[in-house]
Image: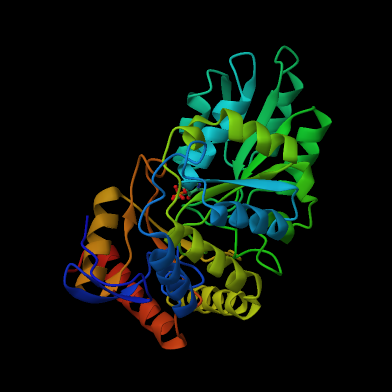
Length: 371
Ligand SMILES: Cc1ncc(COP(=O)(O)O)c(C=O)c1O
């Protein structure tokens, strides 16, 4: 692990080197936004450092309930529940809802936390190839023997930056009496006209599915949440072991998330800037003859293929002052090692220009075997 000294910003000091940061999920630049930092500081002064216990025993800060109310309003759902992380939200939700008489169906490229969650349910697990709606339909068509069926997917895929076809998935799930669970970790705050996420982007009714998110990416803080019906959320409060048997989030973290939520909700300008930045990067890469798929998300994968070559490219970028990590199997499928560029709304035009120039230099040197 490289060592970061200083805030999570567009430029960072990492392993003592000043680098352009192309690695952060802090998509809206809120992790060190002055109003978010001030909210955290105020909460720290008022409530101290830690929650002191599980929320069911003594650690249920009123502020956490406020955050849940705001998240439910934001996502247009009846209620929400906040977990210490997005990973724990996924684990707690699936293990509370699915049992060994159920079927859990996953996209092959789902995030590790959804895979781990499914494995911990004891349910039968089926996996369809990435985005293969036909295969999902055929799995569901033969699923009569199961008590409940769950279709579980990332909304914005974390390493490819592409979108799940949520309208199709919802249709198919409804036709077969299955429940759709959507992990919108990378879409919340980013996708949709008011940042409500990928469900808003597709114009779906948020009450027709279970919507999970994280506070650790566009909201620049820490925590995970589940939005849904009152009955669902009450059930999770009483069943989800990753909610019950763990210390509540500290007030400073909750206060930061509340401030970030306000900024994200009114952050249309930030979202537009983020899209402009993505477009500038994709167009620049295309001009430099570097293959990168066009997505409407801040995640831009540049497939290198060979793991060693991807690691070498990341190292050369770092030496040139650009921090962009390489992702290798098993995080990504064999033969698709890549540089995962993630952009922030606060990157400037100059930053993106520099990113393109440096990527072009490094990748062309890599292709020709140069140093
Ligand atoms: C799709 C997805 N879901 C869940 C998580 C976990 O969220 P958290 O970091 O809040 O635990 C991540 C990344 O960390 C993710 O990319």
